Length: 370
Image (cartoon, rainbow, N blue to C red; front, side):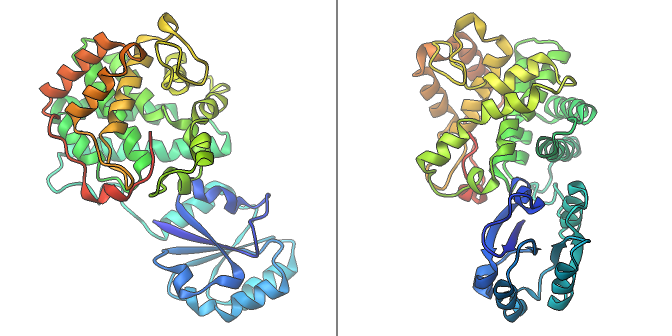
């Protein structure tokens, strides 16, 4: 789903609209440039009236017909009579107070589209996988909100999702799970779901306890939590990233540390998976340059699953590696990865019939997720 954000110039720093691109694919349009072409295929428009000039409002009013066919939400200050009059003068729109709890604004936007998380799943997807997929999506959405609002992470939902994913993997297999997650419209969500499935299956193949299997699945779901501080316009960008955009994405483990440090409800092992999954055994990784035994087995497992998922994902600017090709590339990384564990991972991939995985065609337009 794409939404357009309409403002007179750049969005004010204290506008809640600035948070929306972390939850939806969003574009900012200046009031003076609203047109059918600018609106495009957007499903919802959110108009920020804070600090709007008379000239900007006049331009918006003259082109208001451009957004007449989609739902429009105008944000106003209940104590600012001028804003209320301006919103009423625009006509056809839903007026919301700017100090409305952000969760309610999110809920209202989602209600205007009512997109079912499972609507894009391949026909015939097993019920157990569908249930786990929906539960995991719900958790990822709640995680994004928790990161944006500095609220508690819903640990019960995380644990429930991890348990349901493990059940789906056990009953339906990894291939079914990977087919399902590839259908997700967001490359970022799809990547986290894929890493969770790979991690759970790999841990199970290593003979780890069910508790540890569930924990690495939760670690896979949460490992990119730091990306919740990076706009989707960058995360899901179809073109190759600029150096500045790549540098911002490379900061996501540090953002993850900032988000998770005060969250006492999250286990230390899960925190390490989120913060350290780009660390490499030879000390060349980031953010802390950890080496050897300072990197736990669970982190090593998540790192292997993360790299494999990234290599086998199609992007608009690169072709996907075949699973065998991805494993070969990872073997070439030598001492950077736990090669004994990588060999076991390669065996798991072949045993689960992933040797000929093909990414969905629709995924080719997706952006970066690694």
